[in-house]
Amino acid sequence: MKRTTGNTIIHGHLPQLLGYQLRLTQLAVFKDFSDSVSDADITPSLFAVLVVIDANPGLKQTELAKAVHLDRSTVVSAIDKLERRNLVQRKRVAGDRRTNALQLTNAGSTLLAQLTLEVSEHERQIAAQLTQTERETLIQLLSKVSPESR
Amino acid sequence: MKRTTGNTIIHGHLPQLLGYQLRLTQLAVFKDFSDSVSDADITPSLFAVLVVIDANPGLKQTELAKAVHLDRSTVVSAIDKLERRNLVQRKRVAGDRRTNALQLTNAGSTLLAQLTLEVSEHERQIAAQLTQTERETLIQLLSKVSPESR
DNA sequence: TATTGTTATACTCTATAACTATA
DNA sequence: TATAGTTATAGAGTATAACAATA
Image (cartoon, rainbow over all chains, first blue to last red; front, top):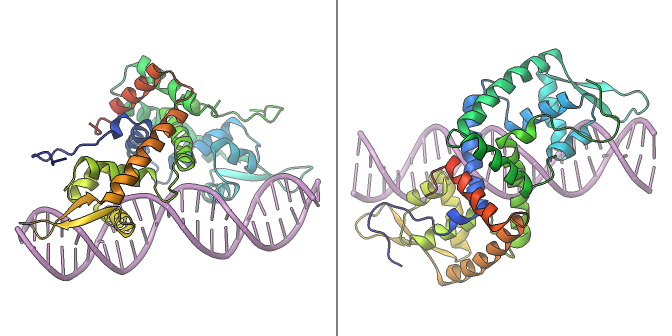
C-alpha cells in the first residue's frame, strides 16, 4: 500500500481496460484533429455531417441525425452553423412540406475536398506508430465492438 | 450524385477513419458503462480517479490531474464530489502546506471493490464480439496510438 | 519567483420536453 | 394521431485566467 518513492504514478488496472484506452486514444485523436485541420471551426462531428450529406445528397435532418448518432435537436444547430457559413443548404421538398432536403453548396464541396485531404494527413499522423496492417486491424476490431457504422 | 432509392444512409469514407470508429465505439462504451455500474453518479472519469488514488495513496492533486489527463481545476471539483460522498479524503502533508495527500476512505475502498467487479462485467459486455486474443490486440493497438498510459 | 489548490467563469456538446406545421 | 423541424432550456464536462497561501 505504500507510495512508490519516485514521481511515478501507477495507473492500477486501468491500462488493461478497453474503456480507458479508448478514452485516452480519443483524447489524443481529437487534439490532433484540431491541430491538423486548418478550419478551426470544423470539429470531428461537423466533418462527419459534411461527409454524410455529400454521400447522401437530399437526405433529411432526421436521417442525418440517425446516421451520425446525434439527436434531432442537435442536428438543427449543426446545420444552422453550416448554413450560416454557406456550406450546406436546406432545400424544400416537393410532396412533404415538413422535411428539408440537405445538400452541400459549392463552397461546402470545396471545403470538404480540402478537409478530406487534411483528415487523411491527420489519420496518417495518429496511426504513425502502426503498420498499415495494424491500422486496418484496429479499425476492424473497433467496428466489431460498435457494429452500427456500416 | 443521386440518392439511393431506399432508406439506406451511406457513411461515405467515414467507416475507414480511425477517428470516426473511435468516436462510435466510445459512445457505445460510455452508454454501456452507465448501464452496467449500479452507482449512477460514478462516471468513467470518476472511476479512473478512484483507481489511481487507490494505486497511489497519498498522491497530490496535481499528480492525479496529470495521471488522468484532466486540468487541476477539474480535479478540484472531482475530489469535491468524491469527498462530499465520503469516498476520498484530503489529508494535510507535513512539510508542504500547499499540497493535499489524497486517499480513499474505507467507504471509498469498499465502493471501488464493487465498482471493479461491475466494470469487469461491463468490459466483458463490450468485448462480447471479440475473442480474448482480439480484445488484447485491440488494447495493445490503442495503447500504441496513445502511449502515455503506461 | 514558482507551485498548489482554489474560485469564478465561460464554452462546447449534448439531450429533454414542449411547440408548430404539416401529414 | 404521428412525424419533421424547431425552440427553450438545462446539465455534464471541460478549460482558462486570476487569486491566496506557501515554498
